[in-house]
Image 1: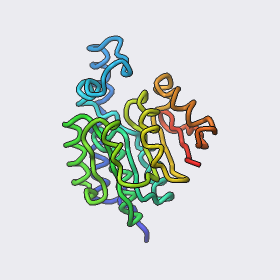
Image 2: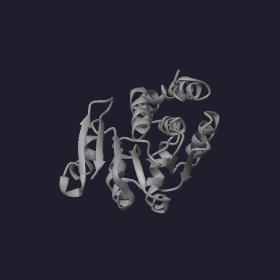
Image 3: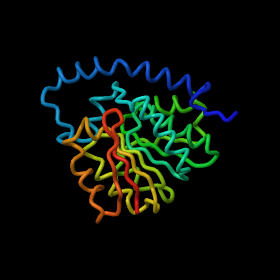
Length: 222
């Protein structure tokens, strides 16, 4: 019977542990908001944002994780790129799909040093280090050095940076590349410029909103 690494150890165990740990995020966000009244992400440097949220998971939902896995299994991309690793929950789902496909590679990027270390450890524990790596540093710098065409892009970092990251990677997107943006409803104001861009056919995408969790936007490069 065909199987999925998402459903079996060690990957399934890591996913369950990470989602369990991320349940503290509601309390962490409440404390964060209380300590930083008037917090506006786009007004702060990326390094400061990483510092302020170094202990907060900010994960994709279980539903989104499974959807990402399904997409990668179906698209069978050679190079998957993720903007915003955090503790690596989405990266584990992406890497599990690449692993189950039998080909491909995942490159994820994260600015927080502590999260880089944690995500790498989680990928190793899940048995996926051979197909996935976490690049440390500012994505607007690190992702300029991608090795080859990008077939699948997940935007899951700070929403106001979605469009700059997309524009950086855009010359390397393959025809038919899939781009998924997370939290597009939850952070609608910070994502407005991105959504306007990918929904304008003149920019070379067909794009649709998906009612999954806090809102996804699924775009295809023409």
